[in-house]
Length: 269
Image 1 (cartoon, helix red, strand yellow):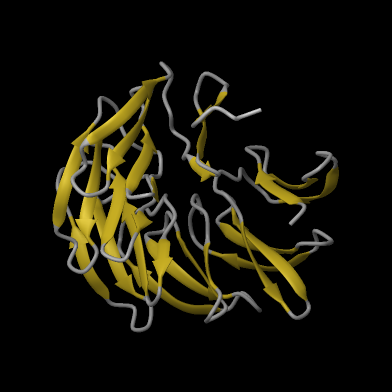
Image 2 (cartoon, rainbow, N blue to C red):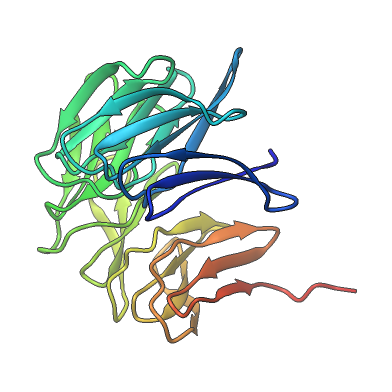
């Protein structure tokens, strides 16, 4: 809607008016907020969930900024929580090594799936399955119904900080081995890799059978989803750790040089 929701390294979670940038409300946690927020709507109104380095997931009323509940883990919550609207659950990884499934209405624990490694990135959901990488150098597919690990992918001794993009048959994720990995969604087998010159913490976006992703080598890449071949790249010259947004045929991304870049066809007068 008209809300821009963003956390800060000062531990403050802000709601800004989309049209004017004016502050609607702010909510304070006890440590930095590095992941993005997510939201869901109930009959009683909309609520927002966000993780913090205070080891907690916070749920806040969208209109008032009032805290509704807090779920506490034993280590940092770094990534962005995913919302399973059908089951009214929140799914997020923690640096305590668990993928947590928490009820959105009350913050009660539904289940924790232990992978015994830091989960710093965000999980991608599709149907009954969650896909995510972790600091144990693996990408994991988990069945959310029974809590079982369906498959794991391991290629090199490098962690995954990027969050995956998922299609009907593929999972694409960046790795700190300087590669973009494309996996078969059914069994986690490698389909292709694309090598960059820097770690890939940027989370890829898939659109129009293309993969768009940044790299710490200072380039933004567009790859063919079918085989991972490079279609084009643009050298910004500063590391790209953030993830691209794609809208109306344009790609928008920020880089470590303090600038935001937009790519796409020129606007017609």
